Length: 203
Image (cartoon, rainbow, N blue to C red):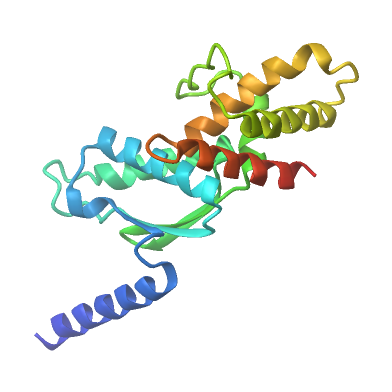
């Protein structure tokens, strides 16, 4: 009985430290909602991409150990590992490691890492978001920032005559950054923030 109380006490102490270190905004608790593997993958992917745009630093992902799973296999934990490895390859995750047997600490990568990885990887495991047919729906200031980013991106690639390629590069960058910015209210404001962060990383 004393040993059981000791274990619960240590677990509570760890949770208290985690709440101070990460807070609710930088914690994703996949254990609470008991998602399927596919649901966990979708939630984790979208959540990490959002925090990459926000450059949130260290994040905590709680998966649980899978002790109560019907098959005895920690589906959410294994899915989380797979997604983290995949997103590290795609430049979304910089590094991750086991925090406890039922959680991981994840550090998101700079936006530039994601953009560079997109250039290297022409066949991603998950389909890239479709590029929009036109950028005319964006505000002028957003298009201007996107054009500057496209020009600097082409400069970094060593493209001398960048004129013919600027529009295509703008569309490519828009597709990637818009996906990271997510949907919902203030989407364009989040997109502009992502463009500004990418510009600081390219400079």
